[in-house]
Image 1 (cartoon, one colour):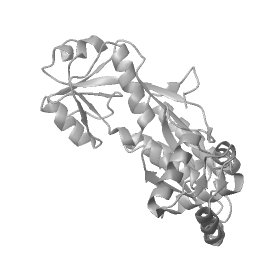
Image 2: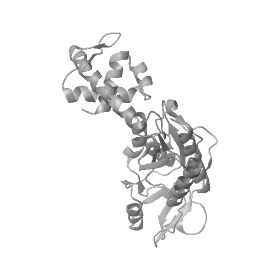
Image 3: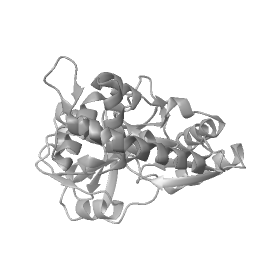
Image 4: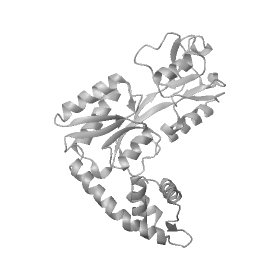
Length: 306
């Protein structure tokens, strides 16, 4: 039984209303409903009676609540003692960054944060967008750098920055020849090498939708998250790959070309739980903005979809 599922159950047992419970947990209602169903399947009992106009605890649910409350209270006491109540006050700020964050961005980010709050150590975790959102809501991270669109319900976001995407191609590909931007429809039928959907489901679906609307229907989709593996697949002719302009030379046999329109882009921002915002998180957000701007990201003129 996962601790966060137990916490979701306890909050719903107190509210007896999925909407209010989801709001307290800083999450959307459908994921909360799914987590409760997962817990019921794991335990083999129904915890809530959903047949009435207002949901009610079953006998099994009432019994579980008696056991859950002291467990959660003990965990909260220990967590608060370890964290000293506020992000950075224990001398460490725990933050997440995307797995494909470039080395120059990390260098500028870490240096910029240290310059702003020299007494706080930044503890970086390489995590996907969805992994960061889960850990933020569980209190295991203080802030995160996420890609949009994503499920940021209940979280606060800093300014959204935009970095246009291009395409990585084998040097012999027809669209790789010449210096003109590539049209999405010229890639139609080619296989697409993309990150696994579980890393960022909303972003994954958004990218495929934009490709479809631009006339690019992949003949096949291959998943890869390690840059070397991605480049190996493209080099072997197993697909093309959408990404921002490289900061280091690509392997021999590969080229990057810009796309004709700018509808495909990384949209990135810092997110955090509103009630936990303080000077250390503000310094981190400023350092991220500085590092991404230096790497070529520009302000996004519209709010990111959530």
